[in-house]
Image 1: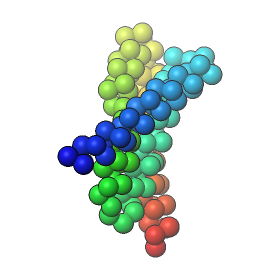
Image 2: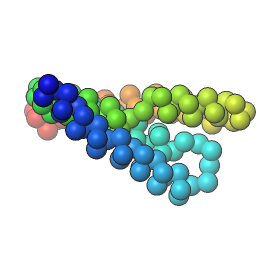
Image 3: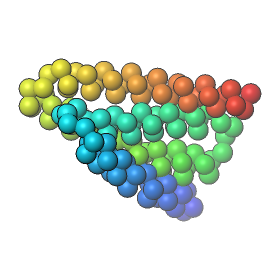
Length: 121
């Protein structure tokens, strides 16, 4: 039962942070490209990679990894926004969103992992 509470506590912070970050980023730029979603997905990937590179700690992984990062990042919003770009015939932005999200997310996760391993030696 404590595992569920840890995940829920992390998600309770991650989900509102995702929403607020996305709104703040989108309000500051004039483009159909979903910069806010890309930002939270890359940031969450970086953090999750970092957490994975740390010595095993189930409590931290449940709260921060599964809960916080799981709620901060959003595959469903990425998919929806990409679909909307295709529907609007914004082909370049749709393709750029797919490529940037996958490559930047994987790259950020790898960088987080390498950083954690460098810190922990």
